[in-house]
Image 1 (cartoon, rainbow, N blue to C red):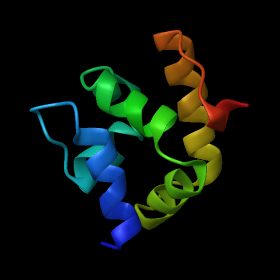
Image 2: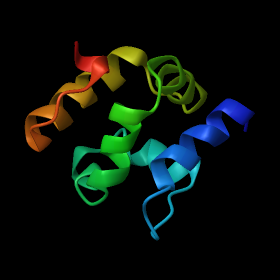
Image 3: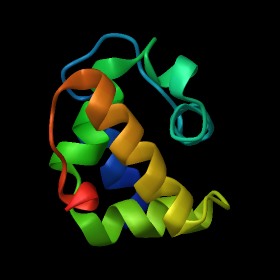
Image 4: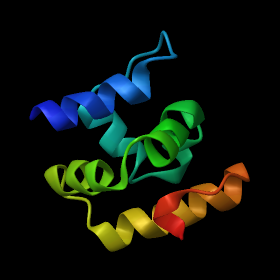
Length: 87
């Protein structure tokens, strides 16, 4: 994993004792029900990780950018938060 992708996990996991690895985070970004079990991590990814790194992470984990955008919109509707990827 590249240094940039590693910084994604640092940002996402920093405030939580429950640490997600890159595969677990990728699964959350592909499954809204799983994402709801880790809402803080997913919200940190969508809100705190720079957009370019979000796209890089998704691409590295075989998540199409359009799918990530659709997921972000769905998660945003559920959480009530707004994220740059949905703009």
